[in-house]
Length: 380
View 1 (cartoon, rainbow, N blue to C red):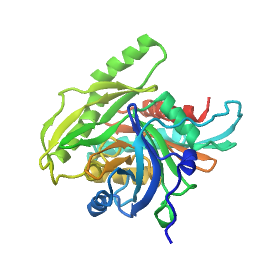
View 2 (tube, rainbow, N blue to C red):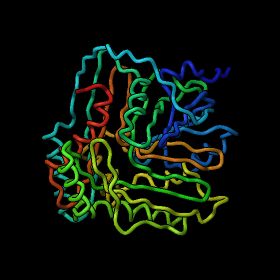
View 3 (cartoon, rainbow, N blue to C red):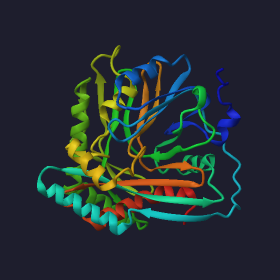
C-alpha cells in the first residue's frame, strides 16, 4: 500500500527547496521519487518530465562523475518565502573539525596536477578538498537553510534529500544536500536558454582598496582568463548541438560573493526546436560536468581527479535544480555546498589548476570558498 505524501509539518524540519534570487520554490508535498544509477541517462530525464502533472516540479540532483546516480523528487509546491524556523541563538555548540586533504596535502596534489599539465596531456583540472564538521548538539537542516536564505552567500539556495523515500515518499531522515551556489549551469524559459559559467577566482579582502585591487588583477590575469575560456568554449560547443543564436561577451564580467571574486560570462541562446527541444534537466545532462568543475580534456581531467581525490566528491560538483512539465527549469552547479547526515556536515570546495597555478594560492582560494559554508554552521 502506498503511503501518503510527506506532510508540510514533516517537511518543515527538512525543507525541500530551490531558491533563485528572491523566489524560493518550497515543496508542500512529495508525490514520488525517481532515481537512476546513471544521472546522464537521457531516457530517465525524459521520464521525469513526462511523469509531472499540473502544478508539479521535479527537484533534482545529479552527481559529478559519469555514470553516477541521479535523483528527482516529484513535488507539489508554490513559489513563496520559506517560513522561518524558531531559532534558539543561545544554544552553545561544540565542533570537531577535520580537514582532508590537509592544506599541505592539497598543495602537493596541485604540484602533481601541474606536472601532468606540463606533460602536455592535460590543460586544466579542478581539484577539491573537504571539511568534516561534527557538531554537538547536531545542526538542524532548517536552521542552516534559513541562514543561507538570510545571508545569501550564493544566488541559488537549495535543499534536496539524497535518499529516495519508501514507496516513493521522500524520507524524513538520512543525508540531505544543502548549499548556496553562485553559479548557474543552465536555465530554460520556453525557447530561451541562459548559462553563466564561473572560472577564475580570487579571495576577497576586508579592505576596500585591496579588494578592488584583487578584482582588477583577476580581470587582467592571463592564467585566470585562460582557465575561464576553457569553460566558455566547452559550454558553447555543447549548446551548438541544440541551440541557435548563441551570444556571449568577448571578455568576462566580475561576479562577487561574500568571500570570492569570480570571472563570469553570461551566455544566451535559443533552442533550435522550441517544441521538442531538450528540457532543462536534459540540458543539464548535456552540459554537465563543465570544465568549471572538471577540466580539459574531460577524460584526462576526470582520470586525474579520480587518482588524486579518490571518492571525495560524490554529490559535490554535480548540479541541482528543478524542471516542470513543460521542460522549463533552472540548474545550478553544486558548489558552496554541504551534505548533512546526522551530526556530521561535510563541506567541499575546489579550484581550477592550469599552467601557472600556484599551490599556495590554490590553498587560499579553496579556504575562502570553504569559509562560505563554514560560517553558516556557526564556526568562528
